[in-house]
Image (cartoon, rainbow, N blue to C red; front, side, top):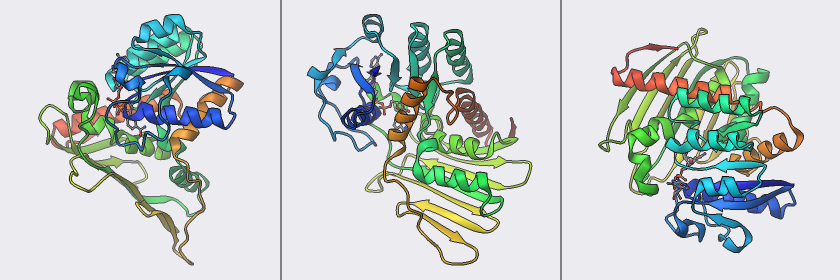
Length: 340
Ligand SMILES: NC(=O)c1ccc[n+]([C@@H]2O[C@H](COP(=O)([O-])OP(=O)(O)OC[C@H]3O[C@@H](n4cnc5c(N)ncnc54)[C@H](O)[C@@H]3O)[C@@H](O)[C@H]2O)c1
Protein backbone atom coordinates (compact mmCIF):
# COMPACT_ATOMS: atom_id res chain seq x y z
CA UNK A 1 0.00 0.00 0.00
CA UNK A 2 1.53 3.29 -1.09
CA UNK A 3 1.17 6.30 1.19
CA UNK A 4 0.67 9.60 -0.58
CA UNK A 5 0.85 13.23 0.48
CA UNK A 6 -1.08 15.61 -1.75
CA UNK A 7 -0.05 19.26 -1.71
CA UNK A 8 -2.11 22.04 -3.29
CA UNK A 9 -5.88 21.56 -3.01
CA UNK A 10 -6.83 24.22 -5.56
CA UNK A 11 -8.71 23.82 -8.83
CA UNK A 12 -6.54 20.95 -10.06
CA UNK A 13 -5.65 19.55 -6.65
CA UNK A 14 -9.35 18.86 -6.13
CA UNK A 15 -9.24 16.80 -9.31
CA UNK A 16 -6.34 14.73 -7.95
CA UNK A 17 -8.10 14.37 -4.60
CA UNK A 18 -11.24 13.03 -6.28
CA UNK A 19 -9.16 10.52 -8.20
CA UNK A 20 -7.43 9.24 -5.04
CA UNK A 21 -10.82 8.76 -3.39
CA UNK A 22 -11.97 6.84 -6.45
CA UNK A 23 -8.81 4.72 -6.58
CA UNK A 24 -9.08 3.90 -2.87
CA UNK A 25 -12.77 3.01 -3.31
CA UNK A 26 -11.77 0.75 -6.20
CA UNK A 27 -9.33 -1.06 -3.92
CA UNK A 28 -6.20 0.25 -5.62
CA UNK A 29 -3.21 -0.18 -3.27
CA UNK A 30 -2.90 3.51 -2.50
CA UNK A 31 -3.72 5.50 0.61
CA UNK A 32 -4.06 9.24 0.60
CA UNK A 33 -2.45 9.82 4.00
CA UNK A 34 -1.91 13.58 4.17
CA UNK A 35 -3.20 16.66 2.43
CA UNK A 36 -1.59 20.08 2.55
CA UNK A 37 -2.60 23.57 1.53
CA UNK A 38 -1.42 26.92 2.79
CA UNK A 39 -5.06 28.01 2.88
CA UNK A 40 -6.86 26.09 5.67
CA UNK A 41 -10.19 26.76 3.96
CA UNK A 42 -9.06 24.63 1.02
CA UNK A 43 -8.56 21.67 3.35
CA UNK A 44 -12.23 21.95 4.21
CA UNK A 45 -13.25 22.06 0.56
CA UNK A 46 -13.82 25.81 0.51
CA UNK A 47 -12.75 28.13 -2.27
CA UNK A 48 -13.58 28.65 -5.90
CA UNK A 49 -13.63 25.78 -8.35
CA UNK A 50 -11.62 25.94 -11.52
CA UNK A 51 -11.64 24.51 -15.01
CA UNK A 52 -11.77 21.02 -13.59
CA UNK A 53 -15.15 19.55 -12.76
CA UNK A 54 -14.39 19.25 -9.08
CA UNK A 55 -16.32 18.76 -5.94
CA UNK A 56 -17.54 15.26 -6.79
CA UNK A 57 -16.38 14.13 -3.37
CA UNK A 58 -16.58 16.52 -0.40
CA UNK A 59 -13.24 16.81 1.41
CA UNK A 60 -13.41 14.75 4.59
CA UNK A 61 -10.57 16.27 6.60
CA UNK A 62 -10.98 13.68 9.40
CA UNK A 63 -9.74 10.93 7.06
CA UNK A 64 -6.33 12.54 6.47
CA UNK A 65 -3.67 14.36 8.39
CA UNK A 66 -4.00 17.96 7.29
CA UNK A 67 -1.15 20.44 7.00
CA UNK A 68 -0.95 24.10 6.11
CA UNK A 69 2.85 23.95 5.85
CA UNK A 70 4.57 21.77 3.25
CA UNK A 71 7.89 21.43 5.14
CA UNK A 72 6.01 20.25 8.23
CA UNK A 73 4.23 17.59 6.18
CA UNK A 74 7.51 16.39 4.66
CA UNK A 75 9.16 16.21 8.10
CA UNK A 76 6.25 14.50 9.87
CA UNK A 77 5.00 11.96 7.34
CA UNK A 78 6.50 8.69 6.15
CA UNK A 79 5.27 8.82 2.59
CA UNK A 80 6.00 6.81 -0.52
CA UNK A 81 5.38 9.76 -2.79
CA UNK A 82 4.27 13.35 -2.86
CA UNK A 83 1.76 14.57 -5.42
CA UNK A 84 2.50 18.24 -6.11
CA UNK A 85 -0.37 20.34 -7.43
CA UNK A 86 1.05 23.70 -6.45
CA UNK A 87 1.33 26.79 -8.66
CA UNK A 88 4.00 26.37 -11.34
CA UNK A 89 6.64 28.61 -9.71
CA UNK A 90 6.69 26.17 -6.77
CA UNK A 91 7.05 22.95 -8.80
CA UNK A 92 10.86 22.86 -8.83
CA UNK A 93 11.56 23.83 -5.20
CA UNK A 94 8.77 21.61 -3.86
CA UNK A 95 9.85 18.63 -6.00
CA UNK A 96 13.52 18.93 -5.08
CA UNK A 97 12.65 19.08 -1.36
CA UNK A 98 10.52 15.95 -1.54
CA UNK A 99 13.07 14.04 -3.63
CA UNK A 100 15.85 15.01 -1.21
CA UNK A 101 13.69 13.64 1.62
CA UNK A 102 13.65 10.33 -0.25
CA UNK A 103 10.08 10.51 -1.56
CA UNK A 104 9.08 9.85 -5.16
CA UNK A 105 7.35 12.79 -6.86
CA UNK A 106 4.40 13.15 -9.17
CA UNK A 107 4.19 16.84 -10.12
CA UNK A 108 1.60 18.67 -12.20
CA UNK A 109 2.43 20.22 -15.56
CA UNK A 110 4.11 22.39 -16.72
CA UNK A 111 7.23 20.72 -15.35
CA UNK A 112 8.66 24.02 -14.11
CA UNK A 113 8.98 27.69 -14.94
CA UNK A 114 12.24 27.16 -16.88
CA UNK A 115 14.44 24.46 -18.42
CA UNK A 116 17.08 25.16 -15.75
CA UNK A 117 14.56 24.36 -13.03
CA UNK A 118 13.56 21.17 -14.88
CA UNK A 119 17.20 20.13 -14.88
CA UNK A 120 17.40 20.69 -11.10
CA UNK A 121 14.39 18.42 -10.65
CA UNK A 122 15.90 15.66 -12.80
CA UNK A 123 19.23 15.92 -10.96
CA UNK A 124 17.44 15.62 -7.59
CA UNK A 125 15.57 12.57 -8.86
CA UNK A 126 18.81 10.96 -10.04
CA UNK A 127 20.94 11.72 -6.97
CA UNK A 128 18.25 10.29 -4.69
CA UNK A 129 17.32 7.43 -7.00
CA UNK A 130 13.66 8.44 -6.70
CA UNK A 131 11.07 8.57 -9.47
CA UNK A 132 9.86 11.84 -10.94
CA UNK A 133 6.92 12.16 -13.28
CA UNK A 134 5.14 15.22 -14.63
CA UNK A 135 1.38 15.09 -15.07
CA UNK A 136 1.30 15.84 -18.78
CA UNK A 137 -2.14 14.32 -18.76
CA UNK A 138 -2.81 14.22 -22.51
CA UNK A 139 -0.24 11.42 -22.77
CA UNK A 140 -2.79 9.39 -20.78
CA UNK A 141 -5.98 10.79 -22.36
CA UNK A 142 -7.89 8.17 -24.41
CA UNK A 143 -8.45 10.37 -27.50
CA UNK A 144 -4.80 11.45 -27.55
CA UNK A 145 -3.56 7.89 -26.92
CA UNK A 146 -5.60 6.83 -29.95
CA UNK A 147 -3.92 9.52 -32.05
CA UNK A 148 -0.51 8.46 -30.75
CA UNK A 149 -1.24 4.84 -31.74
CA UNK A 150 -2.18 5.97 -35.29
CA UNK A 151 1.08 7.93 -35.57
CA UNK A 152 3.16 5.04 -34.20
CA UNK A 153 1.68 2.12 -36.11
CA UNK A 154 1.17 4.00 -39.38
CA UNK A 155 -2.27 2.52 -40.03
CA UNK A 156 -3.17 5.63 -42.08
CA UNK A 157 0.34 6.26 -43.34
CA UNK A 158 2.43 9.29 -42.47
CA UNK A 159 1.20 12.50 -40.88
CA UNK A 160 0.84 15.26 -43.49
CA UNK A 161 -0.51 18.04 -41.28
CA UNK A 162 -2.01 18.71 -37.88
CA UNK A 163 -3.76 21.45 -35.98
CA UNK A 164 -4.17 21.56 -32.21
CA UNK A 165 -6.25 24.00 -30.18
CA UNK A 166 -7.15 24.68 -26.58
CA UNK A 167 -9.00 27.65 -25.26
CA UNK A 168 -11.46 29.07 -22.82
CA UNK A 169 -12.11 31.88 -20.40
CA UNK A 170 -9.48 33.86 -18.55
CA UNK A 171 -8.55 32.03 -15.31
CA UNK A 172 -9.38 34.42 -12.49
CA UNK A 173 -9.71 31.97 -9.62
CA UNK A 174 -6.14 31.09 -8.76
CA UNK A 175 -4.26 31.50 -5.48
CA UNK A 176 -3.13 35.15 -5.23
CA UNK A 177 -3.97 35.35 -8.97
CA UNK A 178 -0.68 33.52 -9.81
CA UNK A 179 -2.03 32.30 -13.15
CA UNK A 180 -2.19 35.87 -14.47
CA UNK A 181 1.32 36.70 -13.27
CA UNK A 182 3.82 35.98 -16.03
CA UNK A 183 6.75 35.42 -13.65
CA UNK A 184 4.78 32.79 -11.74
CA UNK A 185 2.87 30.98 -14.49
CA UNK A 186 4.43 31.84 -17.84
CA UNK A 187 0.98 32.94 -19.03
CA UNK A 188 -1.32 30.99 -21.30
CA UNK A 189 1.69 29.90 -23.36
CA UNK A 190 3.33 27.93 -20.54
CA UNK A 191 0.22 27.04 -18.58
CA UNK A 192 -2.41 25.98 -21.10
CA UNK A 193 -0.83 25.85 -24.56
CA UNK A 194 1.88 23.66 -22.96
CA UNK A 195 -0.51 20.70 -23.28
CA UNK A 196 -0.39 20.94 -27.07
CA UNK A 197 3.33 21.68 -27.08
CA UNK A 198 3.78 18.50 -25.08
CA UNK A 199 1.45 16.51 -27.35
CA UNK A 200 3.39 17.65 -30.43
CA UNK A 201 6.70 16.77 -28.75
CA UNK A 202 5.31 13.37 -27.68
CA UNK A 203 3.87 12.58 -31.12
CA UNK A 204 6.57 13.94 -33.41
CA UNK A 205 9.64 14.65 -31.27
CA UNK A 206 11.52 17.93 -31.06
CA UNK A 207 10.79 20.26 -33.98
CA UNK A 208 13.85 21.75 -35.67
CA UNK A 209 12.39 25.27 -35.32
CA UNK A 210 9.32 27.18 -34.18
CA UNK A 211 7.69 30.45 -35.12
CA UNK A 212 5.14 31.95 -32.73
CA UNK A 213 2.83 34.93 -32.68
CA UNK A 214 1.60 35.92 -29.25
CA UNK A 215 -0.69 38.55 -27.88
CA UNK A 216 -0.84 39.99 -24.38
CA UNK A 217 -4.41 40.86 -23.43
CA UNK A 218 -4.26 41.01 -19.63
CA UNK A 219 -1.37 43.30 -18.59
CA UNK A 220 1.40 41.39 -16.76
CA UNK A 221 0.08 37.92 -17.57
CA UNK A 222 2.38 36.90 -20.42
CA UNK A 223 0.99 35.77 -23.76
CA UNK A 224 -2.75 35.16 -23.46
CA UNK A 225 -3.24 34.08 -27.09
CA UNK A 226 -0.63 32.19 -29.12
CA UNK A 227 -0.21 30.51 -32.47
CA UNK A 228 2.88 28.43 -33.29
CA UNK A 229 4.12 26.77 -36.46
CA UNK A 230 6.43 23.81 -35.82
CA UNK A 231 9.02 22.98 -38.47
CA UNK A 232 9.97 19.31 -39.01
CA UNK A 233 12.51 17.96 -41.47
CA UNK A 234 9.88 15.95 -43.38
CA UNK A 235 7.80 19.07 -44.07
CA UNK A 236 4.65 18.11 -42.14
CA UNK A 237 2.52 21.19 -41.49
CA UNK A 238 1.91 21.50 -37.75
CA UNK A 239 0.25 24.40 -35.97
CA UNK A 240 -1.09 24.86 -32.43
CA UNK A 241 -3.14 27.70 -31.05
CA UNK A 242 -4.38 28.68 -27.62
CA UNK A 243 -6.43 31.55 -26.32
CA UNK A 244 -7.59 31.95 -22.75
CA UNK A 245 -9.53 35.15 -23.42
CA UNK A 246 -12.58 33.37 -24.85
CA UNK A 247 -14.91 34.73 -22.19
CA UNK A 248 -18.68 34.85 -21.89
CA UNK A 249 -20.42 31.50 -22.25
CA UNK A 250 -17.76 29.97 -24.52
CA UNK A 251 -16.51 27.50 -21.89
CA UNK A 252 -13.40 25.40 -22.43
CA UNK A 253 -12.52 23.24 -25.40
CA UNK A 254 -9.63 21.12 -26.61
CA UNK A 255 -9.40 19.98 -30.21
CA UNK A 256 -7.18 18.44 -32.81
CA UNK A 257 -7.35 17.62 -36.50
CA UNK A 258 -4.56 15.44 -37.83
CA UNK A 259 -4.37 14.48 -41.49
CA UNK A 260 -2.56 11.30 -42.49
CA UNK A 261 -1.84 10.04 -46.01
CA UNK A 262 -4.86 7.73 -45.86
CA UNK A 263 -7.30 9.41 -43.51
CA UNK A 264 -7.81 12.06 -40.90
CA UNK A 265 -8.81 12.29 -37.25
CA UNK A 266 -10.86 15.06 -35.75
CA UNK A 267 -11.36 15.55 -32.00
CA UNK A 268 -13.48 18.29 -30.50
CA UNK A 269 -16.47 18.98 -28.28
CA UNK A 270 -18.40 16.16 -29.98
CA UNK A 271 -15.67 13.60 -29.39
CA UNK A 272 -13.28 11.83 -31.72
CA UNK A 273 -14.17 10.78 -35.27
CA UNK A 274 -11.97 8.99 -37.77
CA UNK A 275 -12.37 9.68 -41.49
CA UNK A 276 -10.49 7.11 -43.59
CA UNK A 277 -9.95 8.30 -47.18
CA UNK A 278 -11.62 5.09 -48.34
CA UNK A 279 -14.75 3.89 -46.57
CA UNK A 280 -17.05 5.17 -43.88
CA UNK A 281 -16.16 7.48 -41.04
CA UNK A 282 -16.42 5.98 -37.55
CA UNK A 283 -16.30 6.84 -33.88
CA UNK A 284 -13.75 4.67 -32.06
CA UNK A 285 -14.88 3.14 -28.79
CA UNK A 286 -12.78 4.68 -26.07
CA UNK A 287 -12.83 4.90 -22.31
CA UNK A 288 -14.79 7.83 -20.92
CA UNK A 289 -12.27 8.34 -18.11
CA UNK A 290 -10.13 11.44 -18.21
CA UNK A 291 -6.36 11.18 -18.44
CA UNK A 292 -5.84 12.27 -14.81
CA UNK A 293 -7.14 8.93 -13.56
CA UNK A 294 -4.80 6.91 -15.80
CA UNK A 295 -1.84 9.21 -15.15
CA UNK A 296 -2.09 8.71 -11.37
CA UNK A 297 -2.59 4.96 -11.81
CA UNK A 298 0.46 4.80 -14.08
CA UNK A 299 2.62 6.53 -11.50
CA UNK A 300 1.37 4.31 -8.66
CA UNK A 301 2.17 1.21 -10.73
CA UNK A 302 5.64 2.52 -11.58
CA UNK A 303 6.43 3.13 -7.90
CA UNK A 304 4.91 -0.16 -6.75
CA UNK A 305 6.67 -2.28 -9.38
CA UNK A 306 9.79 -0.13 -9.60
CA UNK A 307 9.40 0.32 -13.35
CA UNK A 308 10.72 3.24 -15.36
CA UNK A 309 8.64 6.28 -16.20
CA UNK A 310 8.40 5.85 -19.95
CA UNK A 311 5.16 7.51 -21.06
CA UNK A 312 6.06 10.88 -19.55
CA UNK A 313 9.81 10.59 -18.97
CA UNK A 314 11.13 13.72 -17.21
CA UNK A 315 13.72 14.33 -19.94
CA UNK A 316 10.90 14.42 -22.48
CA UNK A 317 8.70 16.75 -20.43
CA UNK A 318 11.75 18.99 -19.96
CA UNK A 319 12.09 19.16 -23.75
CA UNK A 320 8.51 20.39 -23.85
CA UNK A 321 9.58 23.33 -21.67
CA UNK A 322 12.53 23.95 -24.04
CA UNK A 323 10.13 24.18 -26.96
CA UNK A 324 7.85 26.54 -25.02
CA UNK A 325 10.83 28.76 -24.20
CA UNK A 326 11.75 28.90 -27.89
CA UNK A 327 8.14 29.83 -28.65
CA UNK A 328 8.22 32.66 -26.13
CA UNK A 329 11.44 33.99 -27.63
CA UNK A 330 9.93 33.80 -31.10
CA UNK A 331 6.80 35.64 -29.91
CA UNK A 332 8.98 38.31 -28.28
CA UNK A 333 10.55 38.76 -31.74
CA UNK A 334 7.17 38.87 -33.48
CA UNK A 335 7.31 35.45 -35.07
CA UNK A 336 10.98 35.20 -35.91
CA UNK A 337 12.06 31.59 -36.52
CA UNK A 338 13.84 30.14 -33.48
CA UNK A 339 15.96 27.03 -33.98
CA UNK A 340 15.96 24.25 -31.41
N1 LIG B 1 -3.30 18.93 -16.01
C1 LIG B 1 -4.23 19.85 -16.14
O1 LIG B 1 -5.12 19.72 -16.99
C2 LIG B 1 -4.21 21.05 -15.24
C3 LIG B 1 -5.34 21.87 -15.15
C4 LIG B 1 -5.28 22.95 -14.27
C5 LIG B 1 -4.12 23.21 -13.54
N2 LIG B 1 -3.05 22.41 -13.69
C6 LIG B 1 -1.79 22.68 -12.97
O2 LIG B 1 -2.00 22.43 -11.59
C7 LIG B 1 -1.22 23.34 -10.80
C8 LIG B 1 -2.12 24.08 -9.84
O3 LIG B 1 -3.06 24.86 -10.59
P1 LIG B 1 -4.49 25.25 -9.98
O4 LIG B 1 -5.30 25.71 -11.15
O5 LIG B 1 -5.00 24.15 -9.14
O6 LIG B 1 -4.11 26.50 -9.09
P2 LIG B 1 -4.90 27.04 -7.81
O7 LIG B 1 -4.41 28.41 -7.56
O8 LIG B 1 -6.38 26.81 -7.98
O9 LIG B 1 -4.42 26.04 -6.67
C9 LIG B 1 -3.17 26.13 -6.06
C10 LIG B 1 -3.32 25.73 -4.59
O10 LIG B 1 -2.02 25.72 -4.00
C11 LIG B 1 -2.13 26.30 -2.70
N3 LIG B 1 -0.81 26.83 -2.33
C12 LIG B 1 -0.17 27.92 -2.83
N4 LIG B 1 1.05 28.07 -2.27
C13 LIG B 1 1.18 27.04 -1.40
C14 LIG B 1 2.21 26.63 -0.52
N5 LIG B 1 3.37 27.31 -0.43
N6 LIG B 1 2.03 25.52 0.23
C15 LIG B 1 0.87 24.83 0.18
N7 LIG B 1 -0.17 25.18 -0.64
C16 LIG B 1 -0.01 26.26 -1.42
C17 LIG B 1 -3.20 27.37 -2.84
O11 LIG B 1 -3.79 27.74 -1.62
C18 LIG B 1 -4.18 26.70 -3.80
O12 LIG B 1 -5.19 26.00 -3.10
C19 LIG B 1 -0.51 24.26 -11.81
O13 LIG B 1 0.77 23.81 -12.05
C20 LIG B 1 -1.37 24.14 -13.07
O14 LIG B 1 -0.64 24.38 -14.25
C21 LIG B 1 -3.08 21.33 -14.50
